[in-house]
Amino acid sequence: MASMKRKWIWVIGGMVLLIGLFVALSGRRNQATAAEIGGTAVVFVGDLAESVSASGQVAAVRQAALSLTASGVVEQVNVAVGDTVQAGDVLVQLDTAALARAVASAELDVTAAQADLDALLADPTPEDIAAARAAVRNARARLDDLLDGPSEDELAASKASVRAAQANVSAAQADLQATQDVSEADIMEAQANLQDALDQQQAAHDIWTRLADCEENEDGSHTCTPVDNNYMETATQNVQSAKAKVALAQARLDELSAPDAHRIASAQAALNAAVARYDAAVARHEALVLGATDAEIAAAQADLAQAQAALENLLSGPSETDVAIYETRVAQAETALQQARNALADAILVAPFDGVITAVHVNQGERATGLAVTIVDRADLEVILSVDQVDLGRLTVGQPAVATLETWLDEEISATVTAIAPRAMDSESGVAAYEVHLSLGETTLPVRVGMTANADLITARQEGVLLVPNAALTADRQAGTYSVDRVHTDAQGNQTITAVPVTIGLQDDQYTQIIDGLSEGDQVRLSQLDAQKEQTLRPGQRLLGNATGEAE
Image (tube, rainbow, N blue to C red):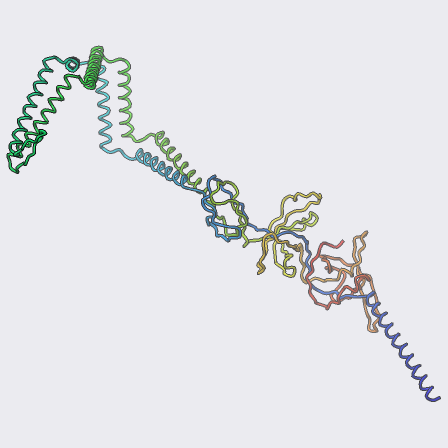
């Protein structure tokens, strides 16, 4: 029986223990629930920033689509996609041979035009003045001669010229007649001269054969053994001279027997020329007798006036008009030279800045014009964001921002707003959005053009201000006021909750600035839904939030 009592005692004790554990666990659960429902936070001093979030892409601040303004055959393509180039590097070059020649020719034109201008402006030399004065004297003498008429000496000289020309005509006629008419006596004389030449040739040959000890062969030829002495040399020369005379005599006989048509034509031409000179002499003589015509006098007067003007210009220097004309020629030549140089420069495409080649649109050997190379400056990158018009009013150039790239979400890059587009982007959705440009600060990340970027544009910042979690605020939307539930705990642990109106300032997605109504260290109750999400803050803890807009 005693053992049974002890057994029941253990059973009852175990049940009591289980009941105690259950009660204890239930109490803890209720306590946790109460904490969740009545969570509090401490009003603290911290920093707060209000910002606008947007996304976009990385772009190069400087990028250029370089085009060939000239047309020609591509001689060199010095780059490929991905190449890094320096400002001034030659990227593409057309065939420049003809363009270079045009530049050289234009340079010569400029030199010649400048030399003419320099000569015009230079002081005249004594030789130039003497020549100009001589020209005036000659022109005046010519005019005087025309006005005075011919002198006796000029008439006599003119008549003599006519007579001489007439004599030349007669001589030419006689020569032509002699060429055309050959008498029988002339032919017989030529035949006799030929026979004499043949006889002299035979005699010279006979002497030569005797001196050479020649023997006659059966066929009539001779075998000779010439001796080396002065007589033999003289005999040989006599034979050659006799042969030449025979040739001349034969040619003369042939000429007389058949007159040369070329010689007759030459004689006829000489006669025609003589007749023309005679006619000209007669015309000049008749004109001299008649005196100068009005046209000749006018021409002589013009020559004199021109010579006098040239002398006066030489002595007084060039006129303003002449200087302007020559200066215009120089300017035109220089303009043509610059155009030629520009054409040559247009055939050579150079990098306008340091950068990376992103596209090459031409090939060596092909005829090309227009777009050739695309280049970007990767050393100066920016982010181009698309910002809704609702947020645009809070942005200004110079505002700070923080950017992150989709490639490295945990790496923040400082940035600054550098430009805001003046007009909205084209959009099919009807929602107006504007491009906002951010310059990226220093970073070790290998940022590339085209990467997707997100940015928080800081529109306002407050430092050392009172902050409460957003979950502590209660908003009266109709009245446009805010309040918080301030919690006061007395020494016995009893809590008193009081609704306190507050004036708020900046607000981000976690905290709100309290301008009036609370003090640092005050406790405030959090809303039931957000209480368990808030962390208890120590007084004096400083936070920097990122807001998406003002409190409603």
